[in-house]
Amino acid sequence: MITFEQVTKIYQSAEQEVRALDEVDLHIEQGEIYGVIGFSGAGKSSLVRCANLLERPTSGKVIVNGQNLLSLSPKDLREAKRHIGMIFQHFNLLNSKTAFTNVAMPLLLMGKSKKEVEQRVYELLDFVGLRDKADNYPDQLSGGQKQRVGIARALATQPSVLLCDEATSALDPQTTESILKLLKKINREYNITILMITHEMGVIREVCDKVAVLDQGSIIESGSVFEVFAQPRTEIAHDFVSTVMHDEIPESVHQLIQSQQSTNQIFRIVFVGDSAGTPLLSQIAKRFDVEVNVLFGSITELQGTPFGNLIVKFDGEPKEINRVIMQINQHEVTVEEVLGNVS
Image (cartoon, rainbow, N blue to C red; front, top):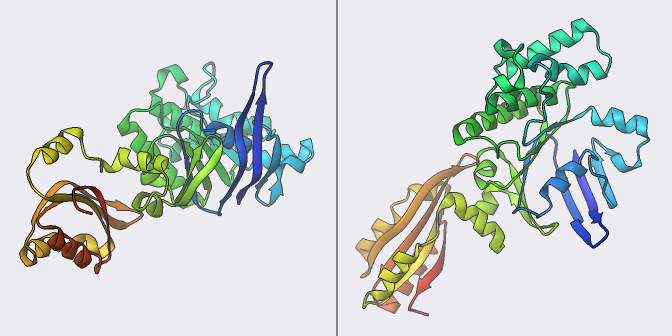
């Protein structure tokens, strides 16, 4: 559906050359919600704007719906872009036009009849829950309502692809949640493929099927949301995951542990699926000569699968702790040491 092949984007200025994208390879399947996350300056906006040639790549291929956009004639490119909708961070609405006219604008530019325009616009305003705001101007709408108008406008031409450039970053948490629910509804009911650019891992967790981590113009990690959350392979991915999983040990707890005159180790234990409901730690405390102290913990759901993440301290003799780890490894869980006195 959307494929980037060796896409490079270089910005030239009088003083320097900035390589915003560096030979990016990315493939997004039909019907997926695919998230791309990265820090400011990672190249996220350049990537999404290359997907509809708002920014033209310096080299490489951008293939959407089986067509390499870079090889199309101007006429064919205009037609291809009608099948690519875009939602902007700051709404990008015409302040002098009503919500109705903002949604209608792409249809008016296509030369659709008044009847066709009216029917489609009211259908979309109904879909985003804003039919009663059709005659309101942007400055009479809340941030969430403005974004819903922007979404309705992006859907006006019945696109097969929807690009979201930080679509929720200007919204409060409650409004963000409602917009994400709307995007999932769009994906489900219209079978529209969504490419979502964000710096918020919570957004990725809530709506995306897959995620790619972008850093300095290159994709350094990608996979299903579950894979990346459960076992991030890069430090940057781990940092993003930590913002929503809260699995880091505060310095105060580090100091408390280090001040205690005992032999202890601290582990991160990840439970997946059915194992999240297994009383494993209770069984360990009864069977082995160790004290078990849960320092932090959470159980959430990722893509419909229970996911538990615990930070646990084991206090006991080294040999006994090693027996505990061997026991844990026999279950469908992942365990790794994050702090300890025992090798």
